[in-house]
Image (tube, rainbow, N blue to C red):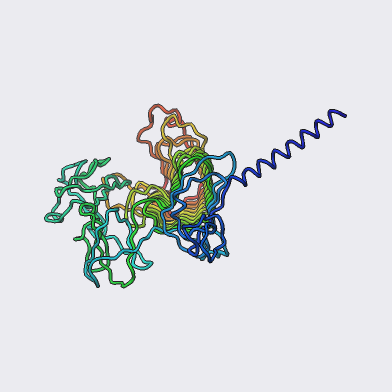
Length: 538
């Protein structure tokens, strides 16, 4: 009887503890609301807009949020159908339970989701179609006329200035070749394609072409570069240039719409200890990454629309678990989705469009870049038009059911789906690449140092081992499946159509690779029942 009594007492105590924990969470967490109808003098803790002045009610802008320190369990609600000027930079303080949530409130359709944007209106000196200017301390990275981006002026207007065979190699400057003589160079940005697969961005600090910081690889004969950022590059059509030397923005436009600029910097940035959920919002016109998260907790991003970011669409650093689902990421200057030192990443049912293409060739790596994760699952995404790789993974990854179309548009030595290992001691679990569809791996050979052009549907590069490539479809690529210094992999049941070079290629040009057992010649790749149409023999 006594034992039953104590069992009942323990049960009651447990229930009371659960209730108290829940009440504690409710007591300590706070909801914040933002609508243009509110006031930044209010506390932001009510959705109700009051006619009389008072402390209770929604914020009018994002500015008060950036001055707060948030805890897990807090929630931020943005009004449907409204636009909010960023950036929004938040600090998160760890709490035992809960997640900081950023979402919408009101009645939102797909076209009426709240938008965080990075634009600011400016008044330029001058009028009409003349070249107009304004002094601006912060670097300008995008310019809009109304809702339309004005193209950034560059020299040459397309392609690269290719260095001749007699050019002198250099790590610290660009050569002042004939087409640049007499032109002002200090303050210009240079984008140098120092490898067929790599573009470096630097600022020129002197009129004789010296750059700020050395190139990683030297500019040498057959490499190429283009310039941006000087007024003399703007032609008679619409264009803009921000001069880092004079800190002046120059604009020419045929439109009479208001001019807005975007300054360098991330649009939504959250740092600290804890977890975050972002759902149902849109982000437009970021001067850096649209979403930049450096957290030690979980990250969930669902049903988010991201457009026109100078940096990455989404960048997540240090999280133990990340889920990005049902989102649309379009027009990013760098990667669409980027992870660094993330333990587990799940990327499902997203559309990623024009990664690394917005604003011209730059140092983009992949539309979905999960190379710096311990484990990744990338399922049923659509990746359309990427400057370089479509999907990039390393060890312990599953890449399944994705559609990758028009990859490798700006660079070469590239694959629509690409994997490699960090070294011979990278012993993470194997990769499985299955039931993906790859169409049109194009490639750009403007800069060519003489190596063979590899534009592959699926590319298994250095140290890749024990990877399974099964039941994929590859259409119109340079090579259907390319294995480079990769051993002990299984390639089975794939359909390869219209390979311009060969359907399946194996290449060993460093067979020992630091003594890694699995890349020695006696450790073979296995090929089973692959259908090859339109390519040659291996």
